[in-house]
Amino acid sequence: MRTAITLLIILSRLIAGFVFIFSGFVKAVDPLGSTYKFIDYFNAFNMSWLEPAAFSMALVLSAAEFTIGVCLILFIQNKCANWGALIFMAFFTPLTFWLALTDPVHDCGCFGDAIILTNWQTFFKNLAILTAAIISFKYRNAVIRWIKLKTERKVSIIIVLLITGFSLYNYYDLPIIDFRPYKIGTNIPEKMKTPKGTPAHVYEQYFTLMDTINMKMIEIESQAYMADSTYWGTNSNWKFVKSGEPKLIKQGYQPPIHDFSIESISGLDITQEILTDTGYYFIVIAYDLKKSRTKHQTAINLLYDQATADGHKFIGLTSSDSEKISALKNTWNIGYEFYLTDPITLKTIVRANPGLIILHKGTIVAKWNVNSLPSYQSIKSKYLNVKS
Image (cartoon, rainbow, N blue to C red; front, side, top):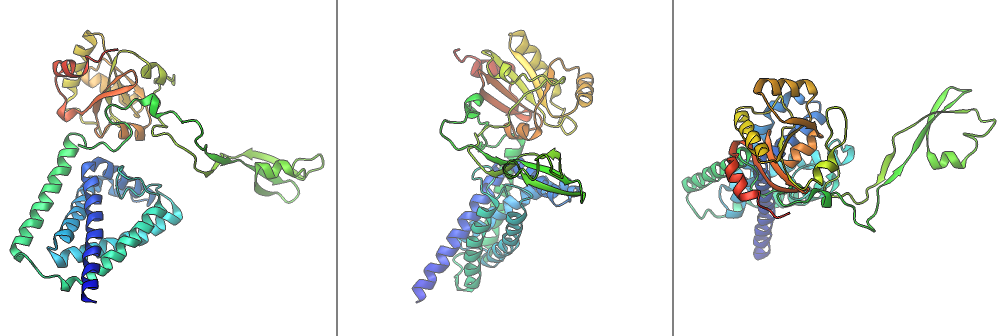
């Protein structure tokens, strides 16, 4: 009996510990992604006033999860680790149940972009981890300390410092592991294709009708409407009011890249023109020019001069309006033109504001955070010698 309990304790700690480690690690790999997810939650809960704290909260969450997980695995800081795991799961399990019921945010973000789970999948995952955390907590006093308490504290502090430093490195540069569909080497047109034989999305169309006698409004599915002449026949007292937006009732196959487009300020779609170009495109990506860091703009301008002098094309992508674009161009004497792309797409392409990518025949050749932007000569020697 004692052996069975011991195995149960060890298994519970290992399960909870590894999940906490993985969850904290993927958040530390992509701290900006975690920041964006916090902002999604704040907007869903009408708490946008918390947005300035999103990045700090992302750092704290990843460090806390990772540290709790390591402590559980190593059987150190037993009291703090078990209380931490239990409090985490006691909070997030009912939260994810509510998210599954209401769906204000479609992806909880618990594993970042490494593993995308639906809200229901996340809830059932949390139930399993909560069970493991409860078992580990219940038998926390059965664990024998194998190193001194003072040493345990030092180890836990080192873990916190290491994972926080790792997060800050990934923020200053780019995530060392790119879990998103726009990683280096990705051919965007290929990732936009839908393979033959894959299931398509299924939609339902609804019509709004008004009873001209009782002045009553109803919404009816289009096929039911067409099948019943009561709603549209010669002597019908129902009047067609409007056609609603199609409602998705069954998710079909969705290609990894499904929302990529580039438009000029005037609204002209130039997506294919850029994706099929046989030359090299230097593309500065700044999803929000108001929040964009400008201290490296002089270096970007120099890169623009050198790249275009060699015949390469150089543009900017943003979701900001023409007024902000003009203001930035005038302030910094920018020579390249800006085009418009969805802000979520831009955040997904590169975790920087601004960042730079090089595109060749629709393939992402390289990308950088402007904090670590190399010289043009370095870029030229390393990336611009691909054979056409």
